[in-house]
Image (tube, rainbow, N blue to C red; front, side, top):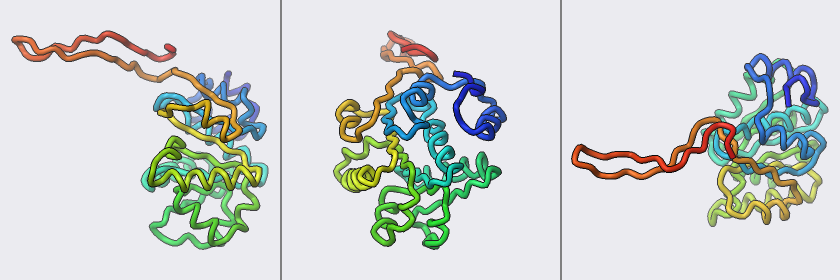
Amino acid sequence: MRISELPVDERIRTILREEGLEALRPAQEKAVRAGLLEGENILVVTPTASGKTLIAELALITHALKGRMGVYIAPLKALAAEKHTLFQKRYARLGVRVTLSIGEYDTPPSHVQRADVLITTSEKLDALLRHDMRFAERLGVAVFDEIHLVQDPQRGPVVEILATLLKQRGVQLIGLSATIGNPDELARWLNARLVRDDWRPVTLERGILIPTGKGVEARVYARDGPGEE
């Protein structure tokens, strides 16, 4: 799907073209066709660097331009800060208010309530919801990055509680993961459409290292290149 064919606000298409994007990657197109922009819950399972972040952006900014809040739930504070910088750079010109709340400092409640896109961690979002549910009334979409952490003994229960709570409130859920062993089961639990794709932007080589008299020889027995499945 060409960017010019993407069914989003023309201002979003303009920004993506300025970023040098001419067409969606396979998983991105599959997500759009699965109902990403129509409010469907989506579980995306694709390799690292295959374009999952743009899937999140399309949903979050589409909701923001319609007056609904979106939340991006990152697994790490550093990643949350990175996404905040990216979203600010790309979409502040559209009047989208991007707010970071990761626990390093107390974000004023008024800032959280006025946010169009809130970027946070699961633990911080849990604390925000326990403190004041009012901002959640505007929530239209929630993106769980690295959603396979729902299986983590320490962090999983918080992710599970958040997903359950938001699902009950009718919030669109988008889960992103590069490594999950039971995607079909998780998709059923989220009541989500599963988007799977093996396309990767760089070649992945698998092989063995063999000691020789002159050192070590690497023998590659399989290659997965861009566009290969």
